[in-house]
Length: 101
Image 1 (tube, rainbow, N blue to C red):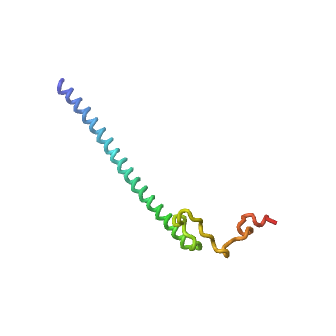
Image 2: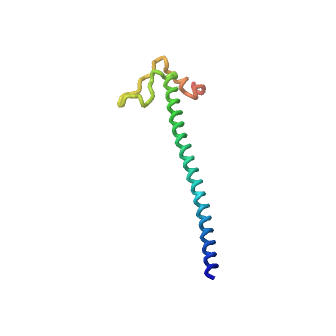
Image 3: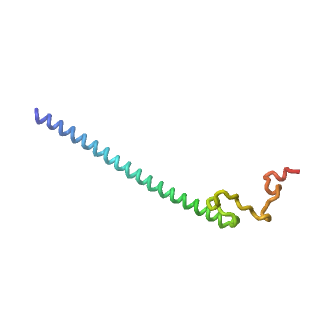
C-alpha cells in the first residue's frame, strides 16, 4: 500500500514537474519575444531619429539655405527675414486667390 502511495505521489510530482517545465519554456519564449520587440523598437527609434535628421539636413540644404533651422536660431533673437525678392504677393499667398476681386 505504501508503494502504491509513493507511486501516486511520484506520478503527481512528475506531472507537476512537466507542467512547470512547459510553463518555464513558455516564459522563456515570451522573454525572448519581448527582447526581440525591444531590440526592434530600439532600431525603430534610431531610424526615426536618423530620418528626422536627414529631413532636417535636406530642408536646410534646399531653398532656405540662408535661414537656419529652429535649433540654430540664437535665443531671444527674431527670425532672419527672407530677401524682398522672395516675398509673395497676397494673391500668390492666398489659397483662394482666384475668388478675390
